[in-house]
Image (cartoon, rainbow over all chains, first blue to last red; front, side):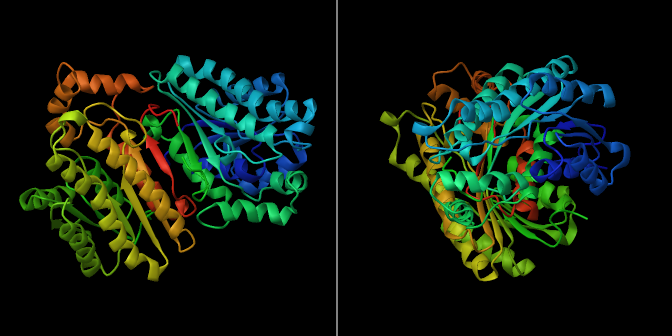
Length: 259
Length: 260
């Protein structure tokens, strides 16, 4: 018997990295899970890897598009009949540069990818959760949702915005059996980090290895976090035991964030 | 198979309320647990209720006293051969008063009970955990460790101090397989809140105990007090292998009360 037996979860960007680890943890606890990604081929490999049969379903979509965000959530309800847990997990940034050189396009890209996607999926999901008076929204923020590194202001600002969104929404639905939390992981060497890290490092005047080292050195554990660290906290927040935790920004960062 | 199979925990103030819920949850996950409290009879009754046989024991002592806190840790190691999880959970106030009327005696008690107890327990535990390169320290702080209510300045100040202690210690032992975290519950109707709540309400100028509980509930998003089980679930997570990379964390269980 799992702590998520009978629950239905939707995870954006769930085909790899943190999202895939959350999907696996949720399935292990008895949930049915929709995972999302842009690439159906990558998803097929992930679904094979999960080996969860009917307990996993893939919905393709680009979270930078509102209609896709809404379709992913609505598609979850259509496929499994409900949505209990939403994890807006996809995110990233591009064309990192100091604010003085940052382009509108780079700022907009990060805001769409991180903030707007979280807002669009949250709004759609809440309209299903409010009538059923049960729900869990677990937004993927970051240690950079509490702090700030130079040259990645787009990422930092959009993750801070997610935290604010969660705090407001938590108060709106707090008496309706719905919790809204953000998890704030430290640096994890996911596929997204490997893809975007070198660009971010260059903008900071570092090598990729130097960037990872900077993150590790800031922490108390002097190493990077792991995807399973985040998944364990998501299971708790998604479970009945998490009913009393809302509006929180849970640090999973090896002791980096000061608050 | 439990998440804490083979682990050994001790819990200050573990016979009732939050500490007791932690003890029950740890036992359910396979750990052995020593609970602590001042009253021997209550401790024995608690062991009977828990029904965990040889996996549970009781150590009598006042958590505001250094000898009792250190004695609990030494007893646990002697009794079960090791200490993996140290929950420094006891705490509270005896009297409430605005700063202008706060007595030295009450202030010293609160510093000993809420702050020094955590320091004594943490230091003793770390000296056992550091050579073993493994351990979990879980401190029961409070929503008042980040906020501040009138009339309970000693509690607020010591819980803020505890948060600082947790963060500093987390950095000291972060590479040694030891995590140090605090849980920050919102108001919970524990035995101690029921005992001291009426006086706290008066010190805050409120119309009785129910008004005090209602004031805390209204500050939250869920508009109700938290429960001991909600805190215990977080303690299990922090004690488990899954949380090996979570440290220095001030984990709120407050229904959305704190702004950060």
